[in-house]
Length: 303
Image 1 (cartoon, one colour):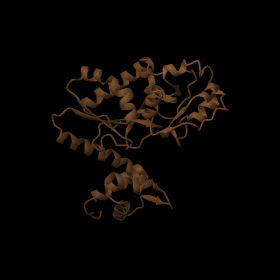
Image 2 (cartoon, one colour):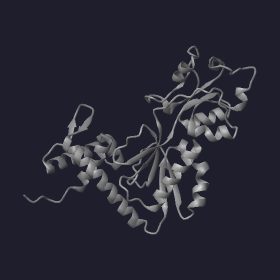
Image 3 (cartoon, rainbow, N blue to C red):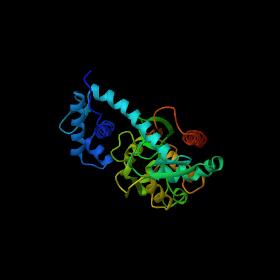
Image 4 (cartoon, rainbow, N blue to C red):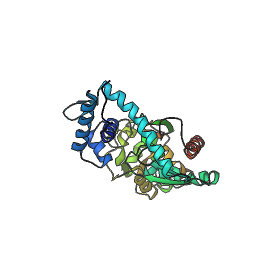
């Protein structure tokens, strides 16, 4: 076999990110380079291998058969490499870095963390929040909890909690005789609070979907303020602004403590759920296994 030059590691990194995102632009944002730089590195790798890795369309790219096979191997290899580097850097350090969305961290995770700390005092948690999808085993993250459909590439994911959707409001609002809330059609007398993060997500119920399912088709679904996230909409409902669509795990504690009331029993299934995401493979640090097992126990208890 004709000897090759050493493998172009920068090109492999660029290709792996582009294959995971199926977007040169998204890969560039993760790697802090330009899309043109990613494209150049991918072309360099294709030339080195002698095979095309992507089928390039007008506004999209798709992996070829060879690209799919290489991407699958690289996801695992880079994950193992990053894990080994993290362990070398953090030898003797029991820090555990967890990435999730702010709403879940504030409304479900934080109120329960005292139990994890009680049972695992030697593990120091670092909870990071944001909408960016950091990859466990990569990007400096050990475990992630994501709200979505699941099926993430290059990681292990399991469904942690379903996310049914139903109306919630401040307790005093549900009992105000001047503005009744005995039937779903009574919502025409109230402000409907909207969550912007539900807009445009197929399978995620919005007010129109709930009102139609409840038979309240004459209530104006589009009326009312739009807030930029699940957490904000929920807090606005607690403050008495109006009625919001709550997501089951995020409103459970506020319902139990009497900060929120559930005026109607109807809940809609949600195509999105909360997923536990961790690196591929079985070789995980003890702190990761301990945290994942604790999450499973807490999710079962909260149901």
